[in-house]
Structures are given as C-alpha cells and as structure tokens.
Image 1 (cartoon, rainbow, N blue to C red):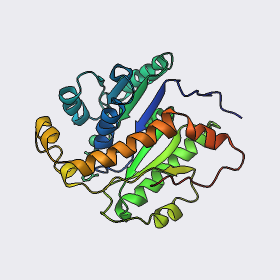
Image 2: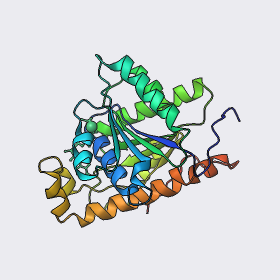
Image 3: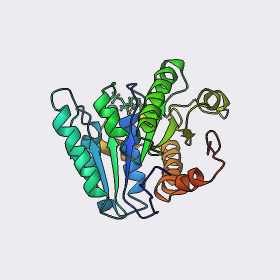
Image 4: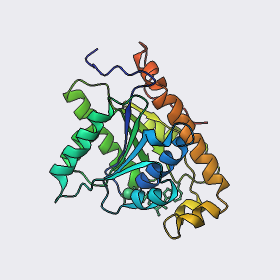
Length: 253
Ligand SMILES: Nc1ncnc2c1ncn2[C@@H]1O[C@H](COP(=O)(O)OP(=O)(O)OP(=O)(O)O)[C@@H](O)[C@H]1O
Ligand SMILES: [Mg+2]
C-alpha cells in the first residue's frame, strides 16, 4: 500500500469540512460536530480551526463551548500563503497528540492551494443538498480531490458526502448514490432541513440553547455517532483495508 499513514483508533485525526460550493452547511456542520464530539471525548482534545473570514464557527463556539480550542486562521487571498502554512503546521503538530481531533471549517471557492491542504487531512466532510445546483459543483470538487489523491498515490483523505437540508420524509438516496457511484466516496447520514438550524445565525447562542430543536439534536447526535464510529474509531480504515471495497458505502439509517 502506498500510504504510510496507518491510523489507530486513538491516533490524532484531522477532519476538513469543505466544498467548492457556498452555503451548503460547512460552518454549521463544523460547529455541530465540535459540539456533539465534545460530549464523547474531552473537549480540550478538540480544536476547531476556522479558516472562513466570516468567523461563524469562532463566534458561535467561543460562546457556546469555551472549553473547545478555537484557532481563527482566515484563508483569503491576502492571508492565503501564511495561514495555509499555519494550518498545515497545526495539523502536523496535532499528529503527535493521541486522541486529538482537529475540525477545519473552510471557505467556499476553488483555490488549488486550499485543496492541496484539504488533501492532507485524514478525512473530508463534503456537505451538499440534493439539488443539482449543489450536486454538480460537489461532483467536480470530489473529482479534483480524487485527482490530488491519485497524483500522490494516497488513499487518504476519506471523502464523506454529507447530505444536508434534506426534506423531511426523504428516505431514498439512490439517485445521489448513483451519481457518486464512480467516485471513491462514502455517503454519511442525512441531516434534515431543520427550521431551527435555518435560523441558527439570526439569534444569540442562548436562543439556540433554549429553542425547541429536538429534531436538530437528534440529527446531529446521529451524525456525531457516525463520525465517532467510522472516522475516529477507524471503521472506514477497516472497510477500505478489506480487499473488496464496495464502490461507495452508504451508512444511512
Ligand atoms: N440542516 C439544515 N437545515 C436548515 N438550514 C440549514 C441546514 N444546514 C445549514 N443551514 C443554513 O444554510 C445556511 C448556510 O449554512 P452555512 O453557513 O453553514 O454554510 P457554509 O457552507 O458554511 O456557507 P459559506 O460557504 O458561506 O461558508 C445558513 O443559514 C444555515 O443556517
Ligand atoms: Mg461557512
């Protein structure tokens, strides 16, 4: 195997949340993932790296979960080179801290330097809705990630498509699975189109905490358990190390 990065369940891991497409839920998923993981592993072992100039993740998490580490390293044309190097350094250093997880919220857009950085991660979460307007660029993004992986002969990062803003009651993801069939991706559990999340940024953190958001809680809890088992727990490594890897794995409920 050309890959040297053999991970154990306790190895440090970096999870990038990325897509060329804007508004698909990258920041929301980064924040919610950090929060649900903070209930499963010591929050001091979690670092959220916010590379989006909008600071969405930083602002929300610093108030709601001050025990989670937050690094704000905006990747915009002006700061691109410096901050990409800093994120790279952070990920490298983090590898020597067993049990640590770095979640990197990235900005939309198609900077090749950013994609090269994302390709250094252990896993990439790729949120998308089921609409063609999002699926089409998402496919292109997956293709370019596959190319970077092939160029360096790497089997990492694992690519996980995260269906987001899914209409209530939608159970059939076969169309999406078909479209992604030629790519080396896993489809993660769906997150529904949740009113409480739609108004996420309108209010204060306290409003979110007090709001009746049981649907959101159950979806993100399930999402967190999936990441815990398949990513942190090494289940994806196990699946990929088996000889007959299925085209793509669809671990939806
Ligand atoms: N599951 C969901 N249900 C309903 N609304 C959602 C869901 N996920 C995200 N949203 C909403 O979609 C909008 C975009 O989400 P978010 O900011 O997380 O996307 P993004 O990919 O980070 O965007 P950008 O590319 O601008 O950084 C927000 O208003 C958010 O509240
Ligand atoms: Mg964002």
